[in-house]
Image (cartoon, rainbow, N blue to C red):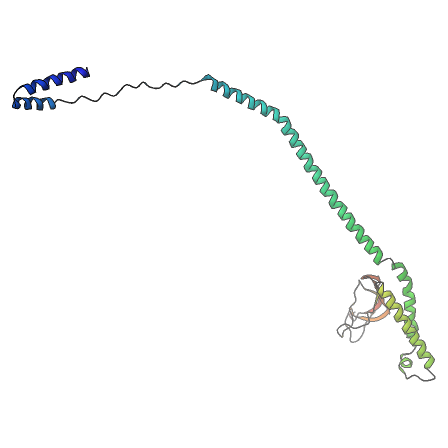
Length: 244
């Protein structure tokens, strides 16, 4: 059809050229004013997609294999979880055992230190009466005779007192090296009498005293002793009680 149309237009053009110029131009103008035919696009067949059944079968097989692998891994996973739980329990028991062993070691060390510090406790208690006897012997000598100038008359007495004091001092220094110390409640603190302390003192009597406050230590019968900071024997004292 398209070729036939072109052929007709060619014949019309030839006839116009064979006629007069005016007629030819008019005919040519008419011919050119005819509507143009739309361009004909070449026919291209639509592409058809074909789906292979092999891909579907492959996907199904992979899914089945994955399911089988998951089912096969489940026992391994359960066993792994169980072993992990057991490992955590063993670790917790091990940490507890280590902590307990450390506590036992520290407790044993403290017990050993205490045993070493207070090993002489019984021996020291037996010596306290001998130390008190030195104090009693020195108190038996009048203070004015000890302070008096040395003469032929009191020479022997003063030498005896010096010997007792030296022996007592050496004994106390030796015991102090092993942790035994003596404390005297009659010694003032900051210019004031010491207050009664139930942890250090044992009150044997209570009485009023002028110039002292209630609870002040007014008299010391026996001095106290400490062994490595622990009270080995409390000092026996008299306490002031002015209030009725």
